[in-house]
Length: 523
Image (cartoon, rainbow, N blue to C red; front, side):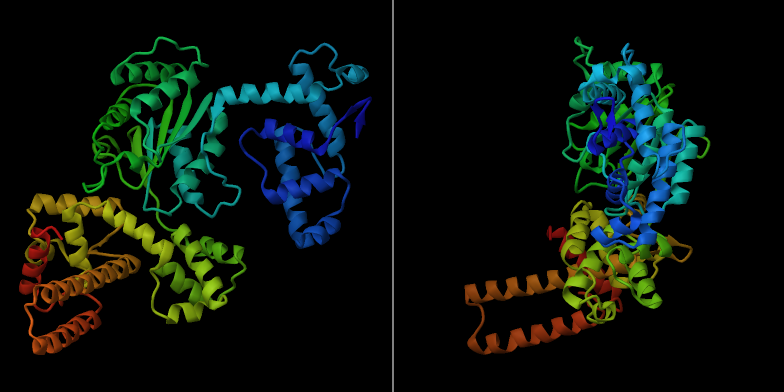
């Protein structure tokens, strides 16, 4: 295609799309449709080359032209894209105040097209910095959550919103989709991941420099001074700040939401963003709710939190279908229910079903082990972040394997004061590791199996250590060596078979004493 000497390639056309859509990138399939439509190919030809269904590509194309029509402010079709992009280029060039930016003088702006796009994108980046924002071109469900969050931020003008949930549940993807949908409502948008736990001074300096267009030179030296400077920008312009993976700044081995030593400044930042008047919004994603946030939030207050649960049945099925796995309805129901609709865990399970069971979910379900590999590692990571008291309660709920009321936990559970027990239960609920109903507290099936497996593994490890110590010290005669392991092994086997846990619930007094002794000895 030539505009009186100015040749426009499909790559340059895609650059215009990138500039117009800003951060709402085209998906891989949309790019394929656009590239080959630009070259004049039919949907049938594209389908033949890439192995897609013609109807699917036609649907993708239809939605693409609608998206471009809305963004360009004029009708865009498969047949007029060359003409539309020529007009768009002229408009962009005129907006940049280039005197010769009209059709009659295209020969004299040869080569200026890429420079114009670079300038346009540079201006966009001054307004938005997406950092490590994730690709959400493939996004499952969450319509209700998005509507709620848009209401809170766009209409209710919340100052701080926390998106909470267990690992793999889709918090980051939800925040990214939300930010894309709301970006036009904000003068500035900044996305930052806290995965590597940057010191709060580094984060504040980074935010201030971006918001000041790198003009700030004499920054305050104290955390409070830096926060005050940031608040000035949040008051003067409507900004959207997204802090992803906030759990990285919390202390492992403590109740949920307690800051790591040296990271308490993040608490100061959140308190001031929540309490002070400004026109901006800070959105954070986390597996744990920051301490101090609960007292500030409410349905009519400018601070709110959304607990993200698993995908609904219909949305979760799309994960299987995207992998080409078509199952009977009852197998979908069993897998989605067992894994609580967790998108990442479902993806891991689907991959295993394909690679080890030839796509036969019934064989996978029949073999009896649903917690393995990446799923085990994810749950293990969350377990090791728990406090000692939280681990105790988790063990008791796993051993009981049924709903326990608060009074039952107080009577038969670990030796915790009432206040401590309430704090532990609240912390575990925040982490999505236990469930609460009118009947009391319990664990989701996936969590309960994980905890039971941990107890079995710990029992076996302690048994082996005991045998090794006895053998090393020579405390057993050859006869007792022959007898006792067999006896112990039989006892262990019986206890493992009895619901695959260490301690039976029938003798709750002895069980309690043994588990308390286990923790008193630092195990």
